[in-house]
Amino acid sequence: ALVSPAPSLLQEILRRLVLRLVMLLGGLLAARVEVLRARLAGVTEGSRAWRALEGEIARLERPVVIGPGNHDHVGPGSVYDRYPFHEVPNLQMIRNPEGETLVLDGLGIEVWGRPHTERVLDFQPFLSPPPRGSAPWQIAIGHGHYIHPQAVLEHSFHIREEHLAATERDYVALGHWERMTRVAAGDRVIAAYSGCPEGPHRTGGWVMVIDLMEDGSVR
Image: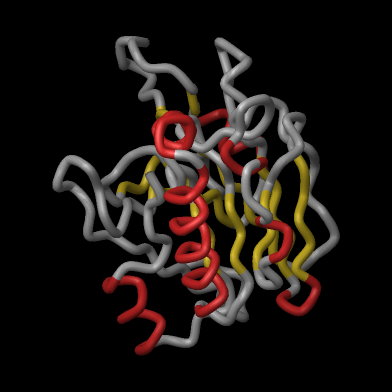
């Protein structure tokens, strides 16, 4: 039920590049499966898996931000309430259901996001975002389905181009799709799904590296 945040692909990138921030965009913990297993097998299996996950995050040795998705939501029944995530020194998490901004002082970065709660039927992670903050770099993170203007609205957790553009962030990091995909976000905002290092449908193998350039551009 616990999905490694740092499989071999990510660890290899960490060895080759100087990364200053790691963002995990939902799907890190399969909450429903984990809770069911804990009920059936007691706390031993879950505790062992948590210790392994805690160690992997700590070994990244750089700030880590988690934006919970639908499989690892916050609120009642959240798997994040079962283990002491707050004790991992390099980890911060978006937990306020109304959305919140994390300030990464040493990096000059602010990260805003709105986590899943599994309590809002028409949840839209980027609807009515707050204004930009004061840090030089502004990032938004969210978990859901990007909706093309001509798409049939079969999916939930809608993310629309106009919502992304309204964030006015320098970069919007998206989770939920397992393939790396850039999406339309207006003329001034860059938004993309990073994909996932390991996916349940053999579609993983992706880690996205974003460069925040001195001239203000994002690559």
